[in-house]
Length: 620
Image (cartoon, rainbow, N blue to C red):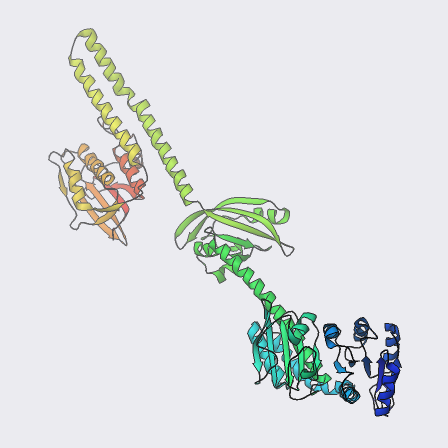
């Protein structure tokens, strides 16, 4: 029973200049076969009108063009189309392949009709609709396999899985998978000892090249009889493109061993493999873009962040992770507006929402507490759109240096104001005294007035020297060096006119990081202050250690300073002595501030004054 009719044999449509003679000869040799001739060059419509009743199409390319065959293929992609011609195959081989011709028989061979009838019988049997049932028995396990294949994320692993399926499910014992690289088809996976064409082949040569370039699957019953193939092996060949990625080939042991079922299964397998490889390629491209984006992002030294519409961290770079007390996973699970106040005190929710809604940009300053180390940052944030969704792109710039410069400038301005105050106010009195006394000496010729003028000039010299020290020593210490405290206290003591005053030194000498000349001036001022405000005082110097810092205490047994005046004493210009400049302890405070130390005044155990310098970093 044939596939489409009721007769005992197949129905064949013959399209050729000699269609009647060919049909008669076929019917004579195979009485059960029904041959329908179409002479001359029929229109494609004439062919299509008869296809519903035929099982095979026999064509002579001298009588029709391959456009007609392509029309037939659109109607029925599996209908056997056999070329039966005396023409040289070289003149139509490529066109035949592109038109997906099923097979070719030379009309000049001695047994041409026997070969043609043999091919018709095999191809029609293969075309029998009962193969649909047989296909389903293989398609079910193949469908189960493809779900695993589509989950694959590696190209070579996907091809290896497909090769396993080709041998274990589709029973292609000898097969290969070639991938196109730089114009060459290179076999990357194979099964069996003989798998088809060469391991490396130009992508436009051989059966593999023609199949790859045309995008058409080829089922060849006998490779040895195929045009332009130099082979003595009487084997069948399946050559199926894997989309634009490469080619699959299966070799059959013997002529015409592959069926329509094999063809359909191979095409289905390669379609799924091509889809998987395309997806992997796209994912690899996306992953490469993401890697490049991440590398660029992490190469930026400033913290960078992208917030979604809920202000959650969508993307952060390494610099941001280093700047906050959270790891990347913690940070990307947080909202920028939900960071605890002990880390960031500022709240810019309103401003961020405004630019998220209406666009524009926002600039603000925050201070980030990272495990006790506070760093000021300037935030620059603007609205962007990604995949149609509004987001916020921001950069945080460390402005510690700028803040330090601003603070240094503020302190410098304070020192200039203090210096100007000394020059404009404190110098005025001794200057007036000196001028008045000199004028009196000139008028009265009483030289005793010059002594008072000299004292006034000495007072001015002291004021100017202290003012200059205050201005210079208030600068921030940039490069402290190790300084041993006990020897430096002794050196400072020798620079003070101590009279009968006494000094006791620490039992243990500590080494701290400081600007040595400025620390010496600081100690001299504290010691001189004690000597100047008491009669032969005893001064006790002690050093204590807390963690990695030291505190230096300098205490005397003098009259001390009332508690409500101690804060004023540390301000420049305050003095209880008519002889002093009022800048001595102010200079001490400035030097301590320049080092980043604390300075405080308290009552000593003997009722005098105790000056403490705290937070002095110990040298390693």
